[in-house]
Structures are given as C-alpha cells and as structure tokens.
Length: 331
Ligand code: TXA
Ligand code: MG
Image (cartoon, rainbow, N blue to C red; front, side, top):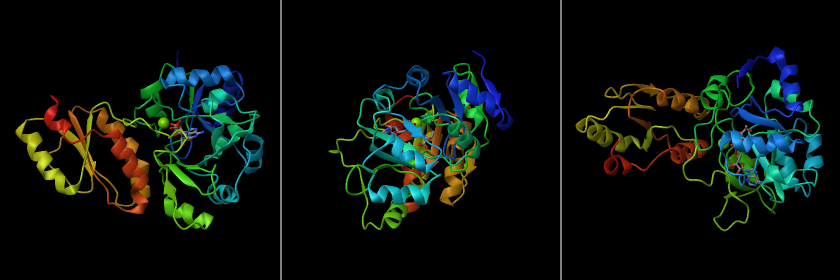
C-alpha cells in the first residue's frame, strides 16, 4: 500500500478516508495518532492489527467540543469538569464511565473510556466532521517510539496505512497525562506535561495520587518496555555517566546520546534544553534520530528530579534498559 502525505489543504480527503472506514495518521499536540472513526468497528479493530497492539489495551476517544462529553460518558464528577474546562483542548485525558454508544472494541470491554480534546486546529476540524469522534492511539508499532512528525509515522507505519495528515511537528512532544475520574478524587494513571500540581490546583485538591497496583482500572503503558528505540537504550544520572563512558570505551563499544553536558567521546551527542517543555518537544525526535545512526548504544542523561519533569522521566525510564544489561549482555 502506498502511504500518501496529505497537507492541511487536503483535509476533505482525510475526512473522506475516515468516513470510508480507513485508518489514517493525524497530528495532535502530543504525538501523531493512528485514527479511526469511533462509529466504525472494523476500522477500530484494524488499528490493533496495524500497530501490533494487544486488543486488551483500550484506545483514547478524541472529541472536538466539551458539549460532546455527556454524549460519550456519564457520572462526571465536578472535579472532572474542572479539569476539562481548565486543560481542554490540551494534553490531558480523562477516564470516565462510558455511555452505551461507545463500542466495547474501543474500551477493551471495560466499563470506562479515556477521552480528550486534542489541541490541534486541523484535527479538531476532522473530528468535528465525524458523528461521535475519532479513536486514536499513538501512530507507532506497539512498544516503539511514538511519532512527533509525519516522517516518524512513515518510518514506523509507511506502507501500512493509506495516508498521513501532516500537521507539522507536535508542540508538546510526549503523550497526554491520563487521569482516572471514576472515584471521589482524581488519580493519575499516566504522567505527562500536565503535572500533579496542575491537577491539584485545578481541582482544589491537596494531594493527588498515582495509581496503586491494587486499582481495578487497567493501567496504561503497563508493559515495562514502551516508547523504546530499537537499539540498547540506557538512562544514567550525571554521576553515573563518566563510569559508563569509561566502560564503553574500554570495551570499544560505540555510543551516541543526549543530555545537558557535552560528552566528547560519543559518536553523536545532542545537547538538550534545560526547560522541560522544550525538552519534551524534542525527546522523541532525538530518540528517533539517534536510533537511525550507527552507534551501538544510546545513552540519555537523566534530567533533574523535580515535579515538572515527571512525565519525561516516566518515558525515559520505560524506554530504557537497566544499566546492568551493559555488563551482562553482548551488545
Ligand atoms: O497524547 C495521547 O494520549 C496520544 C494522542 C494520539 O492522543 N494517544 C496515546 O494513545 O498516547 P495510546 O493508545 O498510545 O495510549 C493510551 C493509553 C493506553 O496505554 C491505554 O491503556 C490507556 O491509555 N487507556 C485507554 N483507555 C483507558 C481506560 N478506559 N482506562 C484506563 N486506561 C486507558
Ligand atoms: Mg502509545
């Protein structure tokens, strides 16, 4: 199958393809999504096949307008409305009890659905042209790095989908924060650039918790390896870096990487911005770039341990292997 790149002026073609039951990649402010019309079960099922994603992993529904929320979910607590009003359109997903119009294929049989309004003008127009909305996971093969440009989508899914709607590079750069809104208080299921503090402030809550292992809700990104480059990927603190570099040099193992300090021994070393918003925007782009180069290992210098970096930490740690793999595995 030939994958064509559609420009914003071709939006009608994008809409027609979705209405005809095809899957196309669409831009959002977080990452590109692999979309299907939320009312077409065959198109939704095909998302799992194309991504090689287990059917037990539910999808996010994207809507265009907050007025549509009650059409798709019920029992919305006050704090969820506060979050929606504060952060939509934007990188926040709310998990709420689903209405019966929502297919079980989207929710993997769960009684809840994850929903958000993405902050991308073209995609909002596409969604508005559909009756119920658009379901879309990230437009990458399961467990691989999420795409933040149309080029990244081509690398991962080129030849497997008819079209990509090119909306430019994603301005947030990592996936949305996911919040379980089925209880009396919000619970964070996946960290993102909307932080715990942002959620506490918007809902007037004192302490927001992350999901406990005992929760009955299925956790997103449960699988340890996620968002991963194909190469061995190691995350190290600034203190650990020099020891690792010494080891790799002794073993004559080539490496590339990214971080805040200059590392002259690397084949390629990308200096990252110290502002977390700018860093997030570049994270997957940097990982895609280094994954395509020759060096055997990719190293990331761990960013500061502070609240604004938790989403970035989560992605780096999920993508990485344990440092000990360097010494036990033949690279
Ligand atoms: O920013 C984003 O969220 C992007 C863009 C495309 O919107 N989407 C995205 O989708 O990251 P995906 O499928 O790669 O990740 C969504 C996560 C999955 O890990 C899934 O387990 C979780 O959301 N999820 C979906 N429905 C859920 C539900 N009802 N309860 C709990 N988790 C849910
Ligand atoms: Mg994903």
